[in-house]
Image (cartoon, rainbow, N blue to C red; front, top):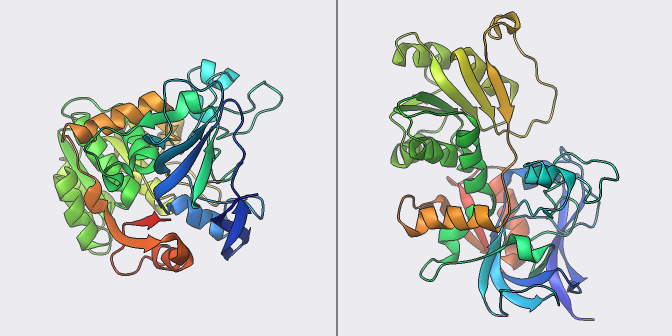
Length: 357
């Protein structure tokens, strides 16, 4: 049986590159030869043991590649075609999918329910940090890459761009709204760009790194707040004339950022939470107005499916947004463990790493 190189999770704090069989293609599947993938913050949560997956699983969930084989019932695609698939690859025939929540796909036939069930790559099935990945329900999830777009231009679409945009979409942003975005890592930067595209009138971003705040201004931020230098809540209230923001987006996953995002909301505002939390959250009584403030707290898992991917790539193709500069480092798959060390420790100004088999 032919084999491939793949990065597998061994246990908390342990990953290794090893040989695995190239997956067999079923009738509804597609085998993709990976040309570029990347490392996500969620992968670091997996590495640290903060999000549980089975030992031996290939991790990673952001595929850009070329169709190597197609299942017998998959139509409308061809071998050799450049494609992406979302980090969320729903079946579109589960109860959750037909209820309009494809990211929460759960069990396809209703036998039990698993939250975040639409997230399969590197979670419940082998993922993309390998030479090949098997895409399930390929008809619903493969999206052709437009001619003229490079791998790195579309690398953020499967997860980072889709997640950041979902945070803005779920925040109920109206034209002219004031929006605060907490944390300007890759997802937060995409949330900032998404808020601008949604029509926000004032975007205030928060981070502790001046270089990320500078990038955020290129993405559409109107005001930047360095939490190491000022009281974030007081500064945002000052910038909004004491009104607070219409929407806040939390893109880190800590108690401190969640609480600050709640404290800067106007009565009736929306807190859109994108962070992956690794411990219980507390909601402060005063900031929550004892439950009487008409606040909305919403969470999002990035939408998947080929139509979502098509829309995101169209934003890039028509020059509404260029996320290529977010790739700051490049490694071959053979050095992916080294890339994890760089990314998880946030050295050398890293934002996103391109991994090429």
